[in-house]
Image 1 (cartoon, rainbow, N blue to C red):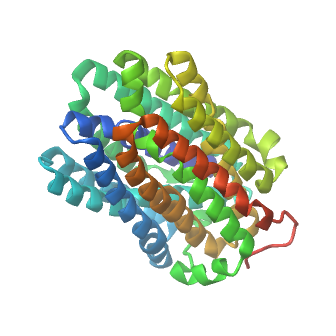
Image 2 (cartoon, rainbow, N blue to C red):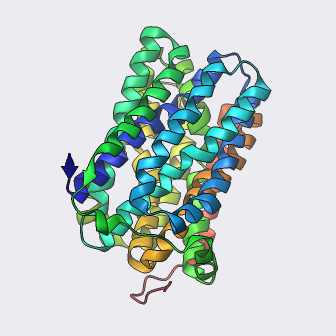
Length: 383
C-alpha cells in the first residue's frame, strides 16, 4: 500500500500523537495509581525527559547521518514498542527510573523525526506544514478520548497497555510506503550541524524562547490530569483534556492561510503571552468553565510556538541541517527545559498547585527577553 507524501506524513503524525496523548496527559495518573508520590512522579518524568534531551540532541542526528529519514521512520517505532513493554513490570521507584530512562532514550526520536519529515517535504513543496501537522492534533484528540474511556471503564491501571498498543499501531503504520520515497531518503549532517546553528544568533533566540515557553507546560503535562480529577468528575476529565488538542487542531488547520503570514517573531511573542495567561488562569480555576477556558489557550501556548519554530526551520535552515535543528528543539525545548521544570513542579505541587502554575507563567514571560534578537528579514540565516 502506498500514500502520497502529504498523506503519508499525516499518518505518521496521527499515529505518533495517539501514543503521545497517553504518555503526556495520563502518565502521571497511571503513576499515581501505582502508588508513587508527586515527588517520585516528578523525578521519574524528569529522568525520562533528561534521557530525551540526550537522544534527540545527539543520537537522532547521528542516526540520521547514517540512515535516511525514511528508514528511521520504519525501524524506530518497533524499538520503542519493545521499550514500552517493561513498564508492565514496574514495581518500585528504582525500577521505574530505569525503565523511564530506557524508554526516554528511544521514544522521543519520533518527535523530531516526524517534524524533520514534515519540514523537509514542505521545503520541497510536497505538503503544507500547518494542515499536515494538524493530523498530529487529531491523533492527540483520539488518544486522549481513548485513554479517558479506558481509564473510566477499566481503571487507570490499563493505561500501560493502551500505551503499548498505541506504539504498536505506530510501528504497523510503517508498512505503508510513500509514493515519492526519494524525497524523504535524506541523510543529515549529524551533530556537525550544531556548529553552524550555534553561529546563528536568530536560531539561538528562537530556541531559547521555545525552551522557556514549551518547558512551562511541565506542570500541566505531568500533573494536569490529576488536578482536573480533583475539580471535576473523572468522566469529564478526558473531555476537558481534549479541548487543548482541539484548539491546536483548529490553529494548525488555519496556519498556512492566517498565521504563517505573521512571521515567526510575532508568533513567538503570541505563544509566550498566551502561555503566561493560560497558567495564570489554570492557577485560579475552581470549576469546569475556567478549566475549559485555560485549555483553549493551548492553541496559543503550544501550537503557536511550534509553528513559529517550524517556519524558521523550513525557511532558513538548509535541508542537511534540519535534523540537527529539530533535534536541538526536541532535546532542549521539549526535553531538558521541560525536565527541569517538571522537577521544580514536583516539589511545588505538594505545597500548592497554584504556586507551580504561577512559576510556569513567570517562565513564559521571561522568554520575551530574547525577542529583540529575532530578525525577520529574507536573508537565509543558516547555510
